[in-house]
Image (cartoon, rainbow, N blue to C red; front, side, top):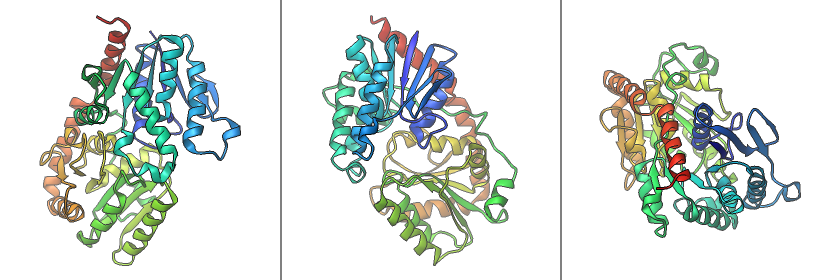
Length: 383
């Protein structure tokens, strides 16, 4: 089975959950299919072909640059039996490949443009183009993969013209060999984190979606003896970057033990940070699933997360963590939930152990890949 996997992110350029998903899915698919990966960048090696936007569009709106990459990807997938695209950055390439070569297009929806109106702040008029690209591709795709049951509901709500039978749920996964407890302390010591004091950890991009400003306001009110570590970078816009910096500076004036790590850390460093955190926090206001919660659970750490999207399908409230409603008093709810976990280290340890067990039992990438290949076989041999 000759498959073309289409994505913006691919190692070493992975900055979000969709990139993590593609990285590990591709690793497993290589043992099950004849796989070519098409991603952003330059060069080709080892079944990975990288495409860059047209130089004539340097400085143009990101959506236009994306479309030029999509055209290059579509041209390059000739000879594939099936294309599988991830995120709006590659969906149009999959759609073009379907039309041009008469092959099936499967797309995985990691998020939905209609549910991310703040993207207009980032893309300007390009948000209308990204929304058009997603709608065009999703409504014509042979199969749409939702990464959670909640995501499936969102897809059918946003795109009512879509046949519900075409929307299938395949959860994200986690490599529990890479993400497992690391009880060393060298990374913490190098970063200057006090190993004798508990800390709350956030790992994610500085975006409206990830809810970082909510977190910065919430941690004002948690136990002042607790440290707060923010692995937060890649701001979507100058505006959200300034807001984050202002809130961080303000928070620095009222509490000690506040750490901001703006650079992307190597995975082993993140694993050690996750392992030693007293609690991991995910304050997202929109999250189809949230791989980072699985990463924390696999490292044996209790999670406090917002009750949105697919997060409740990962974090079991009261068992592997605490879920916080976002509808009202979200920031106060985050603070209360964090304090409740921090005040009960034994309970937090039990949550962490339960989270590790759940991650191993239910979210292995080998199972995700086998389910994905089953979908490939279904669209290649309908009926």
